[in-house]
Image (cartoon, rainbow, N blue to C red; front, side, top):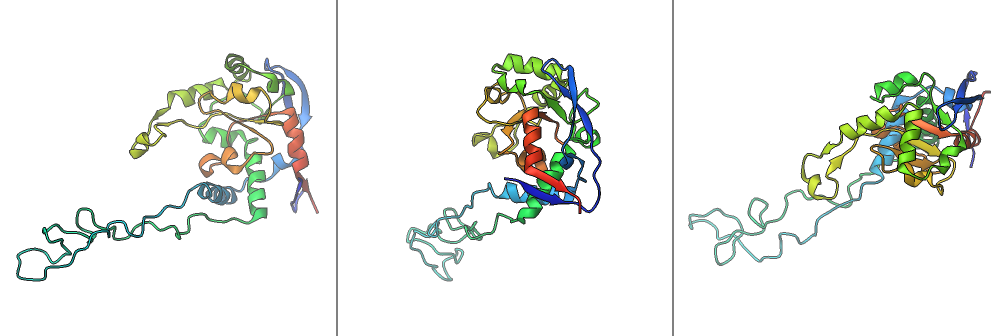
Length: 270
């Protein structure tokens, strides 16, 4: 599906080198016009917030939680607080007693997901794609790389990489392995209760690899490296391109993905 983006000014064309798996320049290619769009951080952050909150599951409490005991206040003259009590004297029902109800429990009707306009969401994704071609924004996110030209574009041979050891050598040849090392060194134990709920470790985001197809061996080869995400162009979202709502993620595209981006995001000037 193609998305048309109209801009009121003329965009300049950029040429970047196309690299092979050894890091050598094969030839130079022209980037799609979407990579020359201005980076709108405000729209990117709004679209990220909408996508992030869409993943949050509404939660609530049982309507009878803390209310399954029959108790009533004894009134005055018994030298005890006037909270509902059982005949044994145990306090029940009140929010300030053990086993009582919550004063203001979470409710499933609470609005959690914030919507965003469809055109605004598409413009945010296009703007986040353009941010991957800006070395200043990529460095401001904390990424480490040894290339002068961004984004990193490689031949379609990267899709045939089927082992993590080969994937490591490819990233070293492309001069982005230092960023994976950074993510591995900064992996840490989460603070709080999340340690007991299946999310014990926090790992920073590292390289994003965008492929033209999701059914390729490279997905399994790259995905277990620290901080590395692999996705196809069809699944590419603002959550991949701008984690935390901050644009400028270090991204590697294959040649097929660049062609798919050009078809998907058609930029025209009036």
